[in-house]
Image (cartoon, rainbow, N blue to C red; front, top):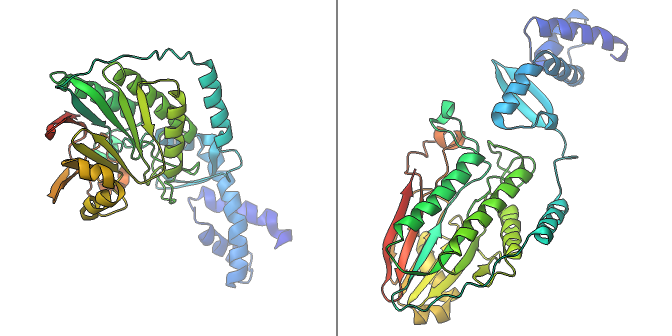
Length: 385
């Protein structure tokens, strides 16, 4: 077979020009043409050799189409290793992860440099004590920066730019709707799939492939800038408590992001942070005990008892108890004994997988809640898209 490589290449090009794209099919044709034994082992060996040659032919012949497909998907063409098309639909396999962008150490170094060069103008803002003050909870849930949705497939577009615009306009809309209340504290709920992927191979933490917009490292920096812009706005209104929820799409990178944000504000006395990797977080505001969790772990009906066990002291001193959950992208609310559990809507668009399975058409929104010191949640604020 080795002496026949040139013949096999020539025949492969012939069948390729005739419109054949299957390496297995071409291998069988060539074995028949050259009267080579049709045993499966020899066919498979020839198929592997042909497959590599077809990849080169495909890249050469269809380079403009491949470049266009990569641009539509937000893929850097230099990261594509193997690509083939059938009926004008592209299948792409990425190069081995030898150069997949900056390492975490490089990102950390970039963040440290940014912090060093950042002018910390966060002078302490002294707030007046108020008896009629309220807590504002702002919770941009499941933003999925880096998700790609095409209106051609799903009926709506979604990308990094739209994600940032929706969070910013959502936060602005919630603040306007809350302007009739005296806000003396803000809880900002972060994490909850703020990033769409967690690996350079464009997968979630557990390895599920995703349709993506942009490179993973750019999306990380976009999310960091978004959080900084939002928090800079919120601390002008009231002191902020930042609660981070780890989540299934970005379990690692979401944690790194939250930690970098807490480092950014390490000299700002008007923000406090809870950025541990714990899956459930709790915050007490006068007679309110507020829990947050992503929602992909403990069952909804178990959350009240978990709150009672994990926040015992706060439980006993609060009479209004709430758990805000995420992950499912639609509204659910249920009163359990002593605790209300509420699932939040998401501002993110519908990608191909969710459209195919019919998981869409829930209202897209950023939500907020007003809690009085004494009576608990007394208003829901919704900014719809």
